[in-house]
Amino acid sequence: MRLADLIQRAGINGVDAGDAAVTGFAIDHRKIAPGTVFGAFQGAKFNAEDFIPAAIEAGAAAIVARAEAKVEGALHIASDEPRQTFANLAAKFFTPVPETVVAVTGTNGKTSTAEMTRQIWRMCGERAASIGTLGVTTPDGSVSTGLTTPDIVTFLSNMSGLAREGVTHVAYEASSHGLSQFRNEGLRVNAGAFTNFSRDHLDYHETMEQYFAAKMRLFDEVVEDGAPAIIWTGPKPDEWTKRAVQHAKRRGLQVLTVGEQGDFLRLAGREATQLGQLLAIEHAGETKSVKLPLIGAYQTANALVSAALAMATGADAAQVFDALGRLQPVRGRLERAVITAAGAPVYVDYAHTPDALEAATVALRPHVDEAKGGKLIVVFGAGGDRDTGKRAPMGEVASKAADTVIVTDDNPRGEDAASIRRQVLAKAGDNTTEIGGRREAIAYAIAQGSAADIILIAGKGHEEGQIIGSGDNMRILPFNDVQVARECAAEMVA
Ligand SMILES: CC(=O)N[C@H]1[C@@H](OP(=O)(O)OP(=O)(O)OC[C@H]2O[C@@H](n3ccc(=O)[nH]c3=O)[C@H](O)[C@@H]2O)O[C@H](CO)[C@@H](O)[C@@H]1O[C@H](C)C(=O)N[C@@H](C)C(=O)N[C@H](CCC(=O)O)C(=O)O
Ligand SMILES: Nc1ncnc2c1ncn2[C@@H]1O[C@H](COP(=O)(O)OP(=O)(O)OP(=O)(O)O)[C@@H](O)[C@H]1O
Ligand SMILES: N[C@H](CCC[C@H](N)C(=O)O)C(=O)O
Ligand SMILES: [Mg+2]
Image (cartoon, rainbow, N blue to C red; front, side, top):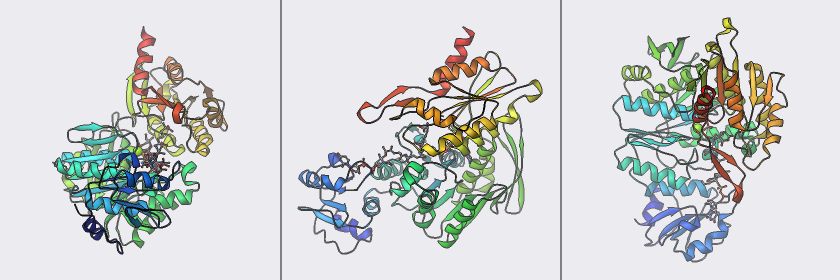
């Protein structure tokens, strides 16, 4: 492929690439082969501009970097926003791409929504895939990628790989890190969704304003002109929701609100049943009744946003409503791991923000048999090397929402686990106990649980390991909450 053609198609002016050919794209200088275009970005740990000479030595055909970067011996594609320019250029190389691509952002619910959108499409007969925290899920299986948002080269090559395998519909999760680092764009995005906004990741974004601005790049820049913007609006739309609507309107997108206050899909009624929820949904002047086979208000929210994404990109409404009734649970999201010998149901949930802990406990509270003196028992911790300011609010929320709370460890990474627990405990009430080892904490909760109780193990969801240490000392010890809960329940019987 000729570099000059890619440059022209990406709308980059003032660069003469001559006859140079392109063989690939890389953002890591160690992955350069002759003919590769190297994106040399300034990162949190490295300034890849330092690796430009080595990249050229290895045969880089061109370097996308700031104008100030020193490039000698290869074409310099200079840009004020090298990551964005690189994404746009690479996207012209990695083709074809799936016909229908949608992106989901928000603090909580991105993975669930991307995954449910994939399921709905599949039930509508499309070959669909999703990309996010759970990895890449295709019609043929799933592969874990480690990060919610892969790097831009992996993202774009995955997209074209999926298209080549015949996948026509992809829903991907646009994290704030990914959006602010231009890690998932360049290709046409047909619709975008915003689930909700609350505290998280302030270690990286510093302020709520900056965190919100990162998310709003989805509506401001990433989705195509005039695209549908699906926005969740709960019973009382908060300021962030209103601002998301403003962003979408300002860009001229087609705003489709969903929820108790929604215009496109209005949640007119929601009743908890033993195994799910009975929903009344208004759409296009008609009210449909849907038996959602999942519990918890938050799962209704994600299911409806997914339904709207599918409908807004061409799926038949009747088929979508039918699919809602057949949704499969999303791994690690209010997943019932086991019922103990004493009869206590144990749920695993990926809640790792104050808002998510609230949502998960609200979802489970109705299942506690209060008439029989049942308790909601919650085990959770907060991750190391992540937003420290969310820790005390998480402890406070859990101790208010649950009857018994056990604060334990969740991926301490490079931090001292005991110090993280202390921060979580700062505003927690007397109903809170501290047990460092996560297995011991889970065993303790399970030993307490009776048939009237509900046990919630929060924070790790689908994760398969406990991350301890950082840098060269980082280790991932195998750990899966569902499996450990089952083991602890079995040990009690033995
Ligand atoms: C803070 C952060 O987001 N970092 C991500 C970011 O790194 P960075 O650009 O700052 O990279 P860097 O390590 O400083 O290196 C700068 C550049 O030098 C290059 N390099 C580096 C070394 C070398 O020898 N040669 C070389 O060329 C690197 O490839 C990179 O392009 O870009 C990298 C590649 O795209 C990511 O792997 C990396 O994720 C790190 C590992 C990470 O932990 N990220 C987490 C926080 C994250 O992004 N999480 C969100 C989930 C959030 C959520 O779900 O709520 C996600 O979307 O996954
Ligand atoms: N719509 C929602 N409203 C409030 N809380 C939610 C919502 N959806 C999910 N949650 C909570 O957030 C947790 C994580 O859900 P999910 O993995 O779908 O979110 P995410 O946005 O992808 O998270 P991450 O940022 O870690 O990738 C759930 O286990 C639940 O506790
Ligand atoms: N995507 C989130 C996941 C957090 C999960 C929790 N188990 C933790 O380690 O904090 C993050 O990287 O912040
Ligand atoms: Mg996710």
